[in-house]
Length: 123
Length: 428
Image (cartoon, rainbow over the protein chains, first blue to last red):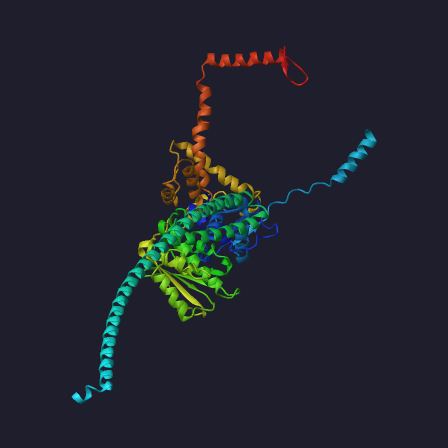
């Protein structure tokens, strides 16, 4: 039923709200779909994590993965992945890197004014 | 003596004695008869009483049976609906996983789980169907599943993970029994206290210890609980008012599946300490080994390597990792390149699935440690389709090529000569 690296049935048996332990979904946009995540050092602490969090950290320890990809691999809803990520980031077990910001688009009003000016000049 | 013969008093005395004797005899007879009658009546009464008891018992068992059947049928429907709803909710959670609505979906999921548990409990007491089949699951997951079925689940803290798994048949019953214990623990303790769960391996199996900091149970309650746990009752008539399902359900499940539940010790926090002992027969080794990180990492390492330099745009890294392995599988017809690591276990796990499910699950299983998942999926499609596509044109004969070109030319010409109306419809 689910695509989960930690086992097919475990997600079915353990519902997502138990995995998040009833935490509110993060409100801010700190974890966008394209935010990149990698595991921080500290493998010893991983043993204490529950299977989903551990799977997540181990998934990321090879390099940077985007939030969307993590969600795809773990097989949990993205919102739930965000909760896990914010937990792990709070513990210092993962490091995030924000995506390259998209180029600032010029204000449409300026463009309109330029267009108007050109039209009055040449039109 | 003869002097008294004429004495009327004498005669009166004689008559009186005679009358008294007659009276005594008749009264004796009457008493005897009454005694006999009494015996007869009491015999009859006994028979009647016995028959009455029998018919009451029969009526009771018939009513019990009727209630059980009715409830069992009703619960089966409800359980089916709860399961169906859970699947629907899971689908929605995945579909709207990125949106605010997910929070509500999680809440609904929680309510649905509680609803399903209630239905299951009643079904258990009515000797009914427990629910869907599960596969082997770790003790930790079974405990978490139980945690998710009670209202105040956030107060439940699981402190240890054991490397044992519960056999598939016992997953659902153990989860349900634990859920009933947790329900009691959360209901009879203050809202700000936590319920601690510890999982311990003992020589006889695995102990799941649940401690609450609640009000505890008095002697009477303990006796009743022990009674229900040790001599499981069937049916819903002896549950009291208001009915208390918890211990009755646990007792039935424990007897049916062979684990033990005890609640007779006090918790160090002042509440109740409940101990569930799962014997070796219900345990097995973990369904699959722990995620194999290093193997997967070794494979993914080349792709992310340039990243620390920071010069390469980051989003490329994952896709580079995804594309890189594509070149590998072309070397041979073998569909699965068998990366080292978790693959064999994963395949065993997926073995019972067929068709599409297996195809989907195999790559997923490979990815446990990271990216190599994609390496397994791609060759299946690329080798099969693209290879043929590329080779096919080479085998076309000249005549075929000519006829294809001719057909194309004819078509173009017809198209040019045909006139169309303003709406594009063709007419001649």
